[in-house]
Image (cartoon, rainbow, N blue to C red; front, side, top):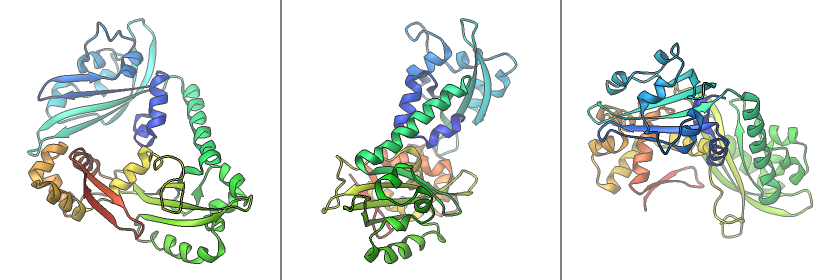
Amino acid sequence: MNAADLKSCSDVFLHIIETHGFAGFWSWSFASNQQHWSSGLFRILGVDPSVTTASYDLLVGLLHPDDRMRMASTAELLQGYVSPDVLVRLIRPSGEMRALSVLSELRVSPEGRPHSVSGIVLDVTDRERLRRIQATEKRRRQALYLTSYTTTYAVGPDRIHDFPAEMAQVHGPSLHEINVNPFVMIVPEERAAFRERALGVHAPRAHFQGTSHERLADGEVWQFRIVGVPLWDEAGRYLGRAGLKYAIGPSGEPVHAAEPARNNQIRRALEQVVQGRHLRAARGLLDWSMATLAAAGGLSLSTVRRLEEDVEGQGSRSRHKAVAALRRAGIRFVAMDDGTLAVAKV
């Protein structure tokens, strides 16, 4: 695992690893010259937040002299250059050495000028301990299906599903059978229609949302909502799907409290579904120009234009920045059961 992998992790997992001293976050706004470090970053660097001022120069200065060149200098950041993902050695004030994975992201103004930079720092010195924490989080996610019939899952480009083992315990068929043919859980009278609709979105790589009645191992029948969203990397390569499944009542509302929180990967996958027409509709609801969206998202005007003309890659970071800016302004992109994406203003 490196810092870039954290972008697809759940908020719960991010909180856990920061609490355990593995992760930290930093940001720097060039216009106000304000810099911020999370409490986790102070712990990783081994400095006292009560007497230490957040500073990019200090962050780089704490690195091993041979590794400082791997990070962009202050001058390079101000000119719009970052080192996206690097592995460096940290020397704490105590003399202890740690291995860090650092991810940096730059935001620019509508005119293309650097606006701010932010980063994620992951301590990868003790990979075995980090692996154990990952395993614990995985067990927590798996156990969730036993108690609330809620889970996230993945579907590879080969259409093989990756469900938690507890799903076999709840429904009866073996985990292998469910992963290869998840429709086996659906009651016979709905199975063929649901399967045809679900498979129909794979070739066009569209998002899917639907409901089904499924029989449990004890004979009970429950209704579930299933969400599946295509996922791309920043180079535009199709990675498969991120999925969410949870039990719902007769009214369609989640059985257990509010709708389960979607983890970062699913949220990012849903954002990748947003196309140019959705962005234009969102701007219309806000009465924003393209320049306004560019400024709010730290993007150049030409980037916003490419997004709205659907020539920007599906996995582009710019798309996520534009969606985040619109969300902050009250826009919501809502996946509907018929496969469409609705745009609303809160």
